[in-house]
Image 1 (tube, rainbow, N blue to C red):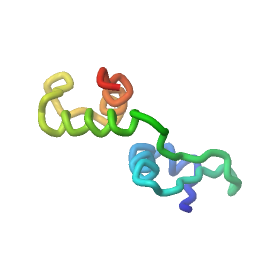
Image 2: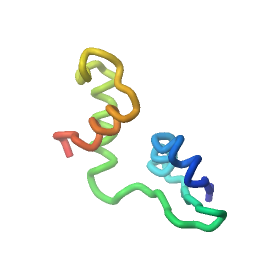
Image 3: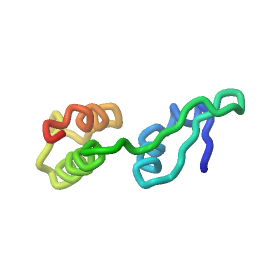
Amino acid sequence: MTTYSVADAKAGLPRLIDKAMAGEEVIITRHGKPVAELRPTAGKAPEATATSYQQLIAGRITPKGKAPNSVELLNMIYDDPLS
């Protein structure tokens, strides 16, 4: 189990999501007390997310003709038509 403060989680949310999807237990704390837990969802969501990411890397999805920033990448993942 790995714990992160709210500030650390806010600064590195994509990294923490990757850890949770890999099976690591991620706990977010506020003032040293656990307040939230990140874990992968059951069902198709992780598979669809991986597919979107693979398509992005393969160059089949090009967001606005430039490399996406983290917000654009997360929006692409959540708006994935494959899910």
